[in-house]
Length: 163
Image (cartoon, rainbow, N blue to C red; front, side):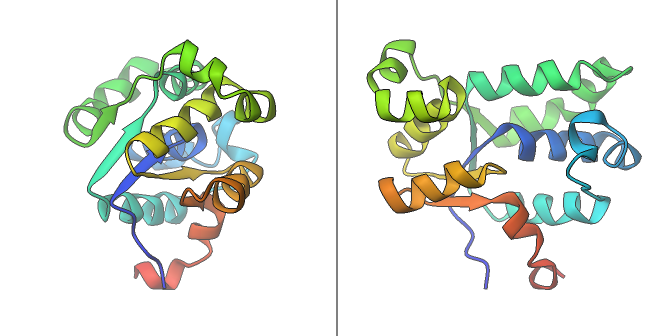
C-alpha cells in the first residue's frame, strides 16, 4: 500500500513530468527531457494523485532553475508557465537553502551536487520526504540519513492503488 507523506520535497524530473503533463499530455512522450524515461499520461495521472494526497509540496531554487532550463527547450515555454502558475501559487512552497549550508554538508555535496544536497537539507528542515527519480539519492536518504524518500518510478509501478 502507498503511504502518502505529509510534506514532499520534489526533485526536477517529477516536477517536470507534472508541469508538462498539466500543460499538454501529448508532450510527455515527445519532450526531450522526459521521453528517455518512456513516461505516459497515465504516469502523470498517478504522480498527480500522489501529490494531491500530500499537505505540502516544497521546491528548492535549484530545482526551479533546472526545471526552467529544461522546459525552456519547449517552443511554448511561456504557455507552460501560464498553465502552471496557479499550481505554483496554491500548492508549492519554495524553501531556500543558503550556499553556506550546502557547502557545510560536504558528504552529500560531494556525492550529489548542489541541487540534491538542497533537497536533503529541505527535507530535514521541514520534516519532509523527497520525491525523486534518482535511485541513488533515494536509497542514500533512506538508508544513511533516515529521511523518507520516494523513487518516482517505484510509485508509478503501483498503478492499481491509485485507481
